[in-house]
Image (cartoon, rainbow, N blue to C red; front, side, top):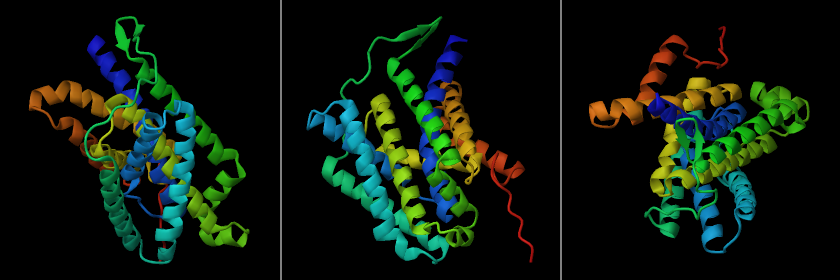
Length: 294
């Protein structure tokens, strides 16, 4: 039971970060019907920028976090303005292919600047573990879980109650109607990319504090894609719930099945479950079913 609880806590922490990054997928898809396959590289950029600010310039964590968020906002808006705005009105598959090319370019630039070796953050949180009865939890896990949950709540409130959040939801429902109401769709697209870069960057910082940083961290983008699809690509609550489901599933599979099958089950299990769920609910757990009449 202790081993199960340890795996459960680990899965909840990773799941919370997955949910945070999955918000980026959902936002961009809701705003523009595009699946951003460069999400993992945005996560990697945020982690490396934050680490460079703390290690090279000796900035405290809060200052480095604020500057990383500002950098992520500028990066997300620049990607939308310079690269993707020219593809408005083009077939969706063309835009998706552009995000694949963008991910390759970003990863190459990252490796040119920072290399491929694993780097670690300076200790940011207290090192003493916390005991919950028989379960021992590192404080970096608790802090990461707490930060991720707070951000998930804040972003949920932002989308539900703020004027920009309401405008983004209106644009996602009907771009033509949003334009007729005076909403700038281009501003909404830029905002969606900026927020996606921010949540990915923060996710990269949290995961980097747990496991260290190298170029393989970008693969989290592909791990998070099943989270967004499982919850429903157009559902923010679905991204949050899907994140916890995939995180816990991955942790349990790694703890119980990897030793039996010699490894690899942890990486495959989320995709297997995703296939089974989509066979039953093709639009995901909370996705909006679309019916077209011709």
